[in-house]
Length: 213
Image (cartoon, rainbow, N blue to C red; front, top):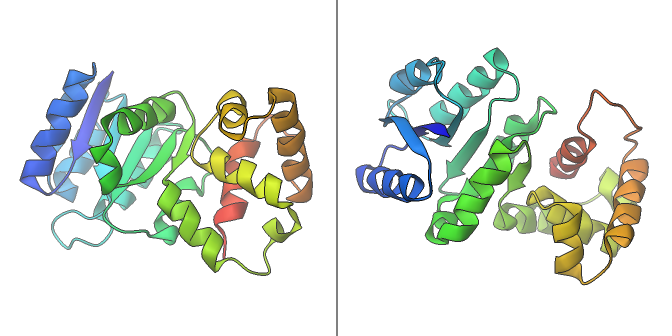
């Protein structure tokens, strides 16, 4: 899998290159600024990207906006976005298209190599991955939202869904059957007013509903 990497911190960028290449990825471009990232994302060889939210020249949200623009040109292009801090707006903006193949992780998560690599693989496979710390922050702030209709068990399922876990993985984490998880997810979709639609990824839409404040 050929990746584009964007990270402004030289040491972390070098570490990510080594980590990703050690796990079977090929880095076709490693950049530290938005203009070079935009050019790299136009390379037809690029199959996915790992991108820092804040890049040169202004260190605001250049990386995120470049990733969103790339996905507008190439729908479904897999992007894993890394952030230093919990920024709920960034996670929501990344998911706004309603498509999968996106991830939003805090940089601290890179320290857990297996978890980070697994997250990148989930995104490449078309899934969504939201950092558990982002999830915890959102849950602590939430009030008067559609997810208030959910039971505590359904909230737990939705939180694990936001981390990009499959029904099987959710079942294992909660020590229940996959059938029970399927029942919870169907109930979540119903309570969040997400009817069956083959053109929409309801898991992504459910996470989007959950991210709104």
